[in-house]
Image (cartoon, rainbow, N blue to C red; front, side, top):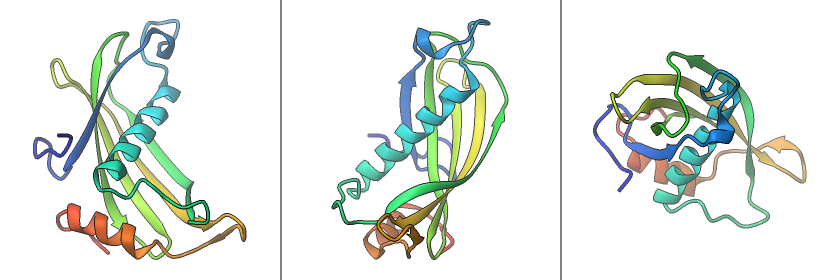
Length: 146
């Protein structure tokens, strides 16, 4: 089960393996490849909470801001564990936090923060985070700022 207590305050992780196509000429993970790792971890987190399935008319989340710090390299065939949590639920946004580690050796590779905004796609306007999602996240995360 992806729920974890190994790296507080993170309570969820997702594992992946670095593919050859994800590396650059130096043989390390290309910096832009971490965003899909974060996306997958976020999707699996939401799946675990049972809130991944949505109706076509439901609001969608769009990226508002992202900050990434690269700390150590990963290479082809390394197994990575991406820890993810919702740090804050705002009126119309979710603030996510990620850390990626190399499974063998435990090197901390990347730390990132993202802010996603709930948007009514037809109106192209921010809308409040749905209570079903808000409640599921708050119920899973300990000490979450609402």
